[in-house]
Each structure stands twice: as structure tokens, then as C-alpha cells.
Image 1 (cartoon, one colour):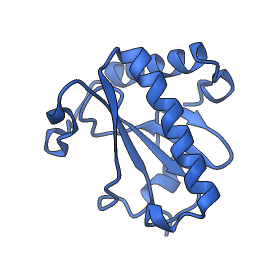
Image 2 (cartoon, one colour):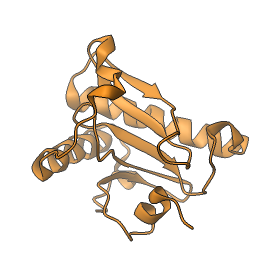
Image 3 (spheres, helix red, strand yellow):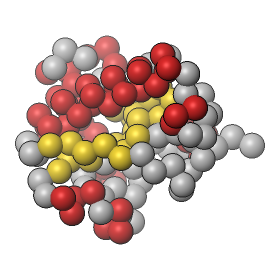
Length: 143
């Protein structure tokens, strides 16, 4: 049975995508800790991030790096944190979220029932910053 993330990638479930290429995608978390909380997910269903083939792993982390540059620019945050948990969905993924203090990565602060407009605004902030940084081809509106 396909994972939740595969179903999002295939369009069976909605997702607010900010990046899409042949190897991975990035979309907003439906339970964000902060606005713009983004997940970078390989298209291949791989349970553990350290089981990704080296080239795919390098690509996923490079996409995370580019997205973090865009998030820092768009949200004017101190840093962008990266976390790998992988217990909630058995499909490798990286969490990216804006940081201004250590508690900004506290998963106990995940929000439910976020207004749709807040998601749309956060996604647009990231896409705009990606374009400004020269990543326009991957920052297309795809949701």
C-alpha cells in the first residue's frame, strides 16, 4: 500500500508543493510547528533516510539546502532548522522550519486546523524566494 507521502506526490491527496523535480518533492507540513514548515520527500518509498542511495541522499539534502536559503530569505528568520524523525510516516523525509529560538523546533507545538490562507501565504513566500534566488524552474506553482 502506498505511503501517505506517495499519495500526496501522486495527487491522490492534496499538498501545497514548493518544489518538484524528478527525484524529490517538497510540500508544506499539514501540522506545522511554524508557518512554512516544509517536508522534503524523495519520490521513492524509502523508510529510513540512511537507506537512500548516496546520490539520492545528496540530492535531497541539496534541495533542503536551497529551500532553507529561500525560507531564510522569505521569512526573515535567524536560521532554518533541519530534523529527521520518520516515525509518523514510514517514508523518508526532512523537516525544515524557520528558527529564531531553540523551542521553534519543538514537535509538541505542531498545529492542527491551520487556516488555508496561512498555508497559501507560506507556500507563496517560499516560491517567491526560490525564484529570487534563481531556482524558478523548480519553484513553479504546482498545487
